[in-house]
Amino acid sequence: MRVRDLSRRGQTIQCPDCSQPVLLEEQDGRLVGVEPIQLPESLQSRVGSSFPVRILLVGILVVTWIVWFLLKPETVSTDTATHSETSVPEESLETSGGTDVGPITIEGDGSANETNEADVDGNGLLQQRLKGIYDSLDRNLALTGSYANGMDLTRDESVPRWSWIAQLERQENAGNLSLDWKAAWNDRQNDSFVRRRLEQYQNPEVTRLAGDDRYPATHFAGVSGVGPDSERLSINHPRAGIFSPFRTVQKSDIVDGTSNTMLIVGVQSMLGAWARPGNATIRSFNQEPYVNGPDGIGTGDQDSMLVLMADGSVKQVSAETDPRIIRRMAAMADGLSLETDENGTPVEFDDRVEEEPEDSSDHEPVLPLLASDAAPFSIDERLEQRLVEYRLVNPTQVGILLREFSEIAGVSVDHSDVDPEQLDHRVTLSLQDVDLLELLKEITASVGLDFEVQARRIRILPKDDPSKSPQD
Image 1 (cartoon, rainbow, N blue to C red):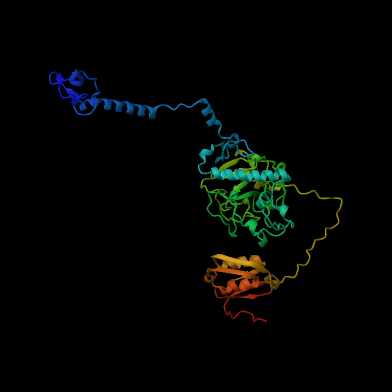
Image 2: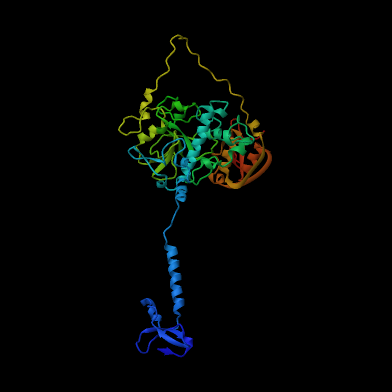
């Protein structure tokens, strides 16, 4: 077949003689039909159209190359693979001071099972902070030979003035802050130290960041043992735990073993300042249920809690765990294992505590020691104490302000004669260079109240109350 129109060179048409597709090529100044390359069926519908075959073939090659490039298998060199496996430091796979990987779950029957960290969703940061606390305690232990209890900062051993956390902070982060360690933790001079928020001692699962005392709170507490009197127990008592401001505990005193003894628990209610001694920073197991129960112990999970053990490991204690097992974990020298088939609990062993042997060589009667007369108490002198500044930016209930005033002045404030609605009224104050008497006048006047200074207390009264004693 020959065609005169040279403009159709390179096109494929249907031969009028054989009805087969032919490719038009130029020969001797004419277009001659030759047998074309057989195209795939999916493209044969374009035969006879004006679509250039060469462009179509190039397009097929380009698409094929793109598909091959996208779907080709990854090739990773040996060096790259080795690097990806060793890029995580080995120490990140171990708990601080311990040898287990991830938390250990204490099941309902008391058995301990190792769990991967990934299985405890959302607790990575919580575990990290618990282990950070262990590291701080361990450094202090290496330095002093005993667990921090705040007593190093206290001159009067009958009244704890600082918490064990404050002792660690003083050692590690106090710096050049203006502090008076002989004064109480909430002394005004110590505000720059105690009003700092310490994220290391806060649980990301607990949203409340301030305590009932309106200071930055801690969400972790040292375990003092079993029972509300556990802080005052002797070291060898079967209910005693590691933390107490009244006893100095060394690692050798943990008779039950560091891997079986609780060091730190989370707290989520009855919160208080991290610098405050007592229940804010030390907790005991007093009333069941122990997990998310009335003792305020927990780490934000409804079904379990994480605890830091004395060996630095983190264990997950189920809410279904036998309460006897939890009591054994809280005590450091009850001599009991964590197996449920072993009978006994620290509470049952109080009678094991041996009495101090009586010295038979001296039977002279012991004379009672009488306390010296208390120093004269003067409310007037206390009200003369001056404040450099008293500023209250956020509106606060008058009842709370009166309670704070009582703590600042060290004087009992009685507002039982006042309508509770007046005490709920919120006010703001900003005063400079005032004494406590002037501060009290401002607080009471802000809601139309009056007060009367008596011999041992301050009585808050409604304005013009007829029961008020005449002033001198």
